[in-house]
Length: 238
Image (cartoon, rainbow, N blue to C red; front, side, top):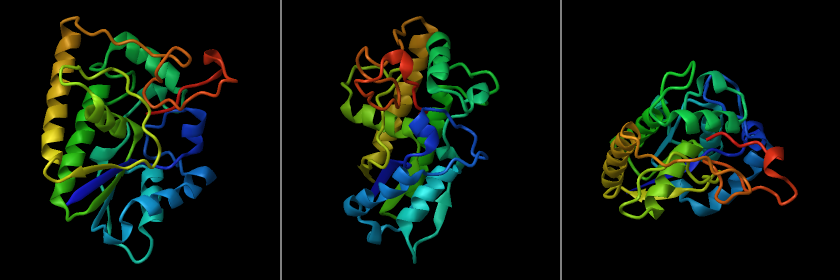
């Protein structure tokens, strides 16, 4: 069996590059996000899906519900798949959080937050692994950081440490992972998390913010139009 993991559809927050780590905030898909769902219908074997899983966030639940159709299996909501808790950065441009993260590292919790970046990633990965408890095939709708981490793992070299910032995960772009591969992948990523924290604790980290216009995009940053200079463009949420 296979688990298909994808980021939710576009919202006005993601379009404006604002962070939302509070599931109580009613951030839903915008028109473009809803319209783009038709592309997923052509990619995924939606009629054969046995289990649908999402985070608690409205945008993820809405994405799954619209893809499920009627009749459909029950929707499994797992808080372990939630977006990061951004604390005092809630609702602000991603660049503000990124600057804080660059200066403080992945294992420190932002002001007002209940978790660090690495703690949040670990939580998300345990939620992905728990998907195997449900019948497959499965579709799991999560958030950009989770999908970015999975894509990084698929493309990284064996000796490459987990970075502080990740390339953007596209909205609604599924990552397919077979049941035999999933536990191995998650175990390897959890080991990478431990190694990355050790590197930071011993001063071995070399992470830096990759700003728009200076190479690869930071975290989940959308590609920038040539008409925008770096200081004219905010960064999106993870």
